Amino acid sequence: MKYIAISLPEKPFIVWSSIPDGAYENPESEYFEHPLVLDEEDVPSTEFGVCPLKIVEGALVSRTPAEMTAFESQWIQSEFLRNNKLIINQVNEGSFTYDTQTFPMDERSRIFYQAFDRARGTVGVKCMTTAGALYTLPVENIDAFMDAYFSQLRELSKPLV
Image (cartoon, rainbow, N blue to C red):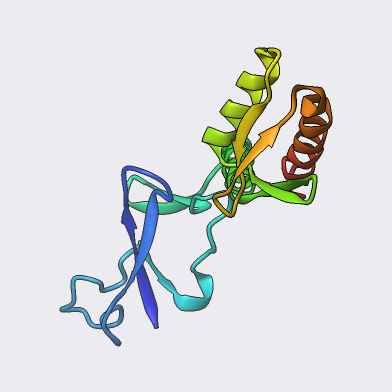
């Protein structure tokens, strides 16, 4: 099987489309000895999200090491950001336990915990458990509650390796 390179304006910049059997060898075919046609085994895999070949003046040429280094840097950064999104999803789906109760760690709950941690008064705080029950947290237990919360937040926020 043979494939022809098709240029794209965005990454991966080239995609490969199969051509009809025998078309490369047929003098009447638009693919006859076309410079952008490769055998299946010669079609390269993408590297860092791009095809390592590019089309220059109608021919396939290798990207320069400088180009590939730049794409590698972009790839590393995008992978880092993608992993951070996975981590925040883990945190949002997480929970922690305090006083035998389980508390959610979704974004709204985290904002709530930080708000009452900063605005301590003389009365307790009512928190919602993951079971939907209202839990009264006495003022004197806020530090222990927040320690349990931050301990789990650190655990769930560890970088993915």
